Length: 185
Image (tube, rainbow, N blue to C red; front, top):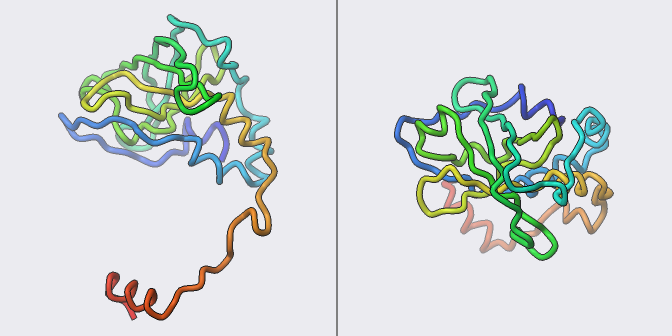
C-alpha cells in the first residue's frame, strides 16, 4: 500500500442517485494490518509531508480524493471546522471537516465508500475521512489525523503470540454448528 494507491489504484464504488450514507469506519483499523509489512513501510517514503494535528486550524481549505464511479479518483473540497480533542479516544483527536463536490451534493452527503479518502491541505497530508457525525445525510465528516496513521507505521510488526494464533481449535460441537449455518460439511 502506498500513498499513491489512494489517488489512482482504488476500488470502484458506485453511488446511486439519491442514496444517503455516512462514513463511519476508521481508517486506522484498516491501515493497522496494511502498514505492518516492510514493503509498506518503505513505500511511506513516497508519501507527502504529514501536517501535525497541532497545526490544523479552523478555516483551512483542503482537497480530498475519492472514487464515486469507475476507477479514477475525483477531488472533493474540504474546510476544516475544528479539531475535537480526544474525539477518537483519549489522546486521539479528530479533525472535523465540511465536504463538498458534485458527487457529494448528488448523494446528499458523504457515503460509506468514502472511508479512507485522503485529505490534503497545501500539499500536506492532513488525514483520512473516517467518521460520519450525524444520523442522517450530511457533508460533515471526521478525519483520522495523518499523524496518527503514520505512528502505526512506526510500530514493529507483530510476531509470535502478539500476532495471534495461527490456528484456532474448534470443538466438535462448534464445527457441527458452523457446518449447519454455512451449509457445508
